[in-house]
Length: 120
Image 1: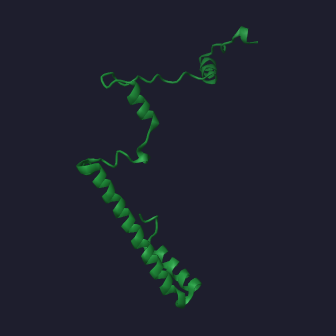
Image 2: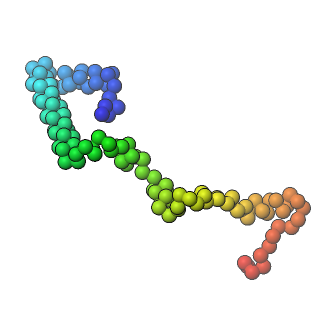
Image 3: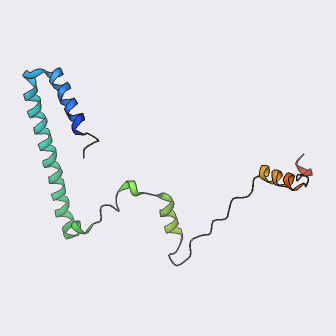
């Protein structure tokens, strides 16, 4: 994961760190950061190995992209759950013409606009 950090941004962060920490404390904090990164990497590798042990040989066969939550589309999931694969896709009817558009069409044709006596 890069978190959107480019080399330029890392360089700026490093320069700011030099000014804030000073040259005396910078090596100590750099070594602490290296230890932290190393321990996080070790924990991640340990978790992956433990998962591989518990899941067995099926671990390598899993398509992890299918489990990505960014792929989640509730409309697709509901459609697949409600419709059989053998049925054709539902036909979407065009939207009804608005009352304003109907009135404009009637006026353009020279007809009086529709009137609903019960609405008043």
